[in-house]
Image (cartoon, rainbow, N blue to C red; front, side):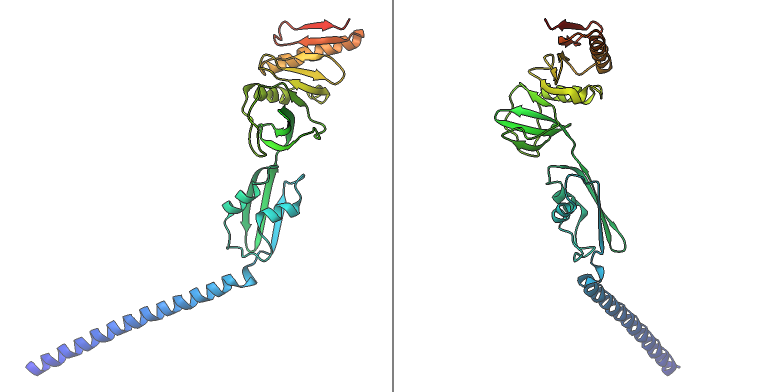
Length: 259
């Protein structure tokens, strides 16, 4: 009886040892398979099979597509996984003309880049510089002479420190001037030759072939634009010419005739 019990215990140990060995073999097999897969993925990632096949760019008019590609540093030899969208976007936004950018992977091997360009709003004369700015007062370009055609020129604004490209003006009178420019009547806006902005209340528009419009604070703009239109229309119908039109109080506008 004792011998039978000893044989049974030995058999159980052999079974346990065999089971443990099988588990170890399974784990080793799994680890080996994972290593093979990882190595295969590494080789695949470093091969040209995962290179970008196509880069689509949209939203650009002023900035050439080639320049956007150059800034992005993406090419058809770039691995689809070997870069971060945030890094590409940051590089794109070093171009002052670009206001925003998005970079998206389109699987399997395509990338789309969408950009929005800044729109020139005015030229600010400050010190010896002519600054081309967008509606948010971000400097797009600057020159020592005014080469920026088709933009209203803002004069006599309170002085601010010299600005670099990409930096922003912060003066209240300049902000007020651009806000008023942005909401001017669409028929009137193209005829603005220059803007005088020594202060908020002192904001005035000099028309290319007409009077100076004393506008003041960029508020009640609909009423002010309506008053300007009515006065200019009446002057045209009656053959009058105005030296200035004052709509700072739009409910009680004033005008002074020439001569």
